[in-house]
Length: 157
Image 1 (cartoon, one colour):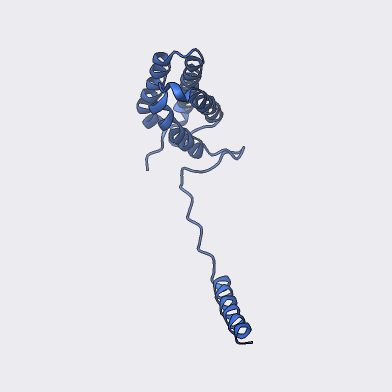
Image 2 (cartoon, one colour):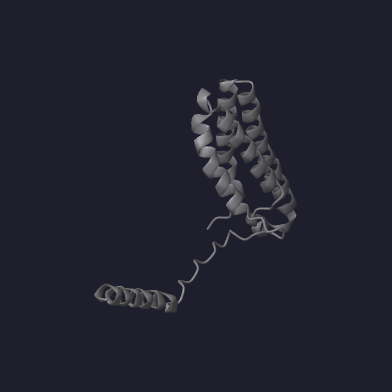
């Protein structure tokens, strides 16, 4: 009987803790970054670019690793698909470009992102042929493209 009473006492204490936690208001959500607004299709260019950066790092480091050909091909294909999605979107910085220059700015962005997608496709094709030197060169081209062009299309904070 003592054991049952002590178990009930513990359960009631636990229930009180749970109820106390339920009564607390949820923490407010972190405010969204100003440059992380989705476009009309619901795509978020900032999030897509972040995913490309996250996935490209490991690929660029292991592109010449003969034991990771299949994984690296898959990563290159996924990166090309992400870059294609990005090409369909317009950077937020376009809003701050004078209207007379905006069309050229968007065309330049689309051309550069198409080059990035093509570099990812070159990595995949080179890995398919087991041409690790070409895969490494294409990865270096993609990295250089990011360094050169990224600042042109990002809205400064």
